Amino acid sequence: MDLSLVKDLNHLFLHVDGLEDMLVLYANLSEALFLGALLVAFALFGAARRAVVSAGLSAGVALALAGIVARVVDRPRPFVADPHGVHLFAAHAADPGFPSDHATAAFAIATALLLHDRRAGIVALVAATVLAVTRVAMGIHYPTDVLAGAALGAATALAVNAPRARALTDRLADRAGDLPLLRRRVA
Image 1 (spheres, helix red, strand yellow):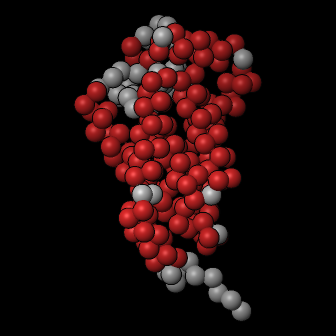
Image 2: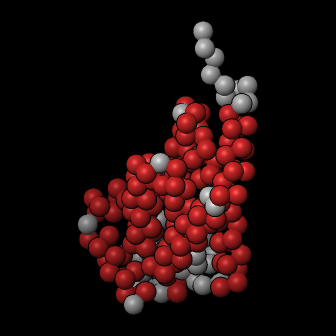
């Protein structure tokens, strides 16, 4: 079933060029988009600093855990396992694909944001979901790769936002906001 979903979405991308072009571009730019949005929010919106620090820490811890899982599981990506049946829409390394790093980071960020700000979190969850589905359609991941990444990212964000951990994260964010470079000057 995992491979058949990859092939169905991959086939859709092969036959709907406008959809494929737009979503592949989004997937390829997603790391910069997510990081850029966090950096802008951190620099410009003092009230968002705690959410941004929480999202960054959640993503960092989740990606470290995903790296360990990837080495242990060592699951080949769809384009590697079935090179003649899956079209690859963007160049990609043939490294292990379980869990998806993109889904892990995106859902860690989205869940952390959701825990701090409902509207921002919902927007980020939609963006993370589109990213996850697109990575499957591109032939880079199986659905279970992105589901595992989403679960790992969300679980890590929940752990980072548990009461004791959140108190530490909030203090770190508050101290980072006190850095002279980030303080707004009031004239």
